[in-house]
Image (tube, rainbow, N blue to C red):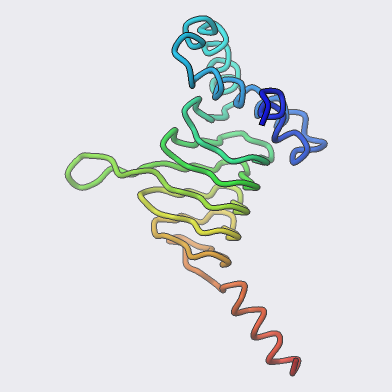
Length: 180
């Protein structure tokens, strides 16, 4: 992927949402700069501007070390906090008030951060913490507190989050009811 394609990889997914397009462009640029020590020195003022503008002014914490797949989408963005150790797959949606990161363990150390699969839709005010995995094609309902891994192709809601249904099972149930 060329450099400009890398910078604009989230633009189409955020069509009509200029704020998200701008923030994600700035995130991809700071993410690219972070890969090379010389660039970090040269672009130090930009790194500080990013931190001030995006994190402090807009209230969107997407750290420069965060690993996020293409077509990342966010709506509103206010209060969005993602720990730099988190791994986010492709085509994921984050809404306002989402917190994703490690948790403090009983011995005072911190756990690893969550790994989020592809095509995950995370509702408003969701908290995902700890060394857990969110599978591909998962929907997490608004206000859920996720502290355990969620299997692929499922929907999770509540505090603590519980899996309501697996999408494949729901499709099979519909087939059984309709007799097909």
